[in-house]
Picture 1: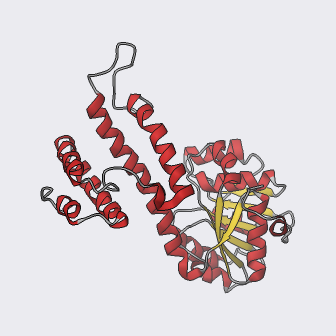
Picture 2: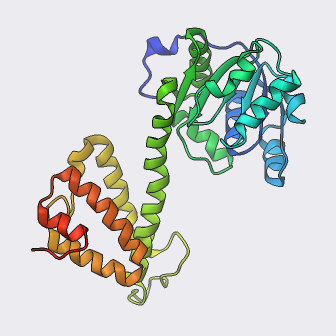
Picture 3: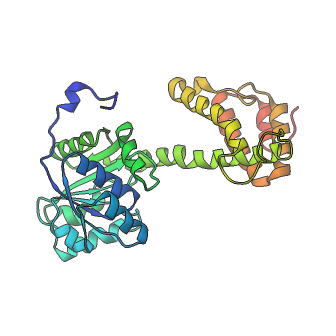
Length: 313
């Protein structure tokens, strides 16, 4: 069980065995369906349109029949709506209009940015609304399901009964439920996106800079620096990034190091000049993050002058 969950917490009410339907068998929906099947629920049906989703359903949700959305809804006690945020409102309205969702059905969506209000058309006909978002990135393989027990799920429900159901489902998947109020759902998702999505951009930019710095200087026994991942630049930066992330999670802002933290405006100016020779946009990204770091670190006027396009005094 995840280390952050107390023994008392895990004794909360657990859902009975449920007939689960998944709309759709994308990366997230398949992982949740597979995890719930491993916990003893029956994933009886799903939707799958693309070749990739059909393949995922066949290999990882083997007992599920591929059906249209309305048919999936009609046979489900737990209906998982794992569609993109832009598709969720229309799907909910369509299911409500068709009348195939029975009163008492647990309807769970996986969107991080939405709470339960988006499920109002189904709540009005007697469904139990849940917003259950895994704070994890998905690649579309069984590795996703294996990662779930190390993750947390942001859960939002209408009442304590709903929270008990959501808590039980998340615990059955081996993960940790975290309550997110309806009014803070967007903030919760924004924080996750800022950390995870922008981290990928940051790392990709850092690797691009390293490629330019290292290319042509490889030792005889090293492979040439190319433009594909998992090469020499990634090996150089990986231990540093891993240590920085670990230190930030364990020590917060106290883990901050580097020229901005040292208020070394001259070095930052040299960094910006070097990056601009490689890619102006790369330098722009560095400047924006350095400015935020400088604010956090309480840097002096000379640092902000450099970051605003001037020279160190």
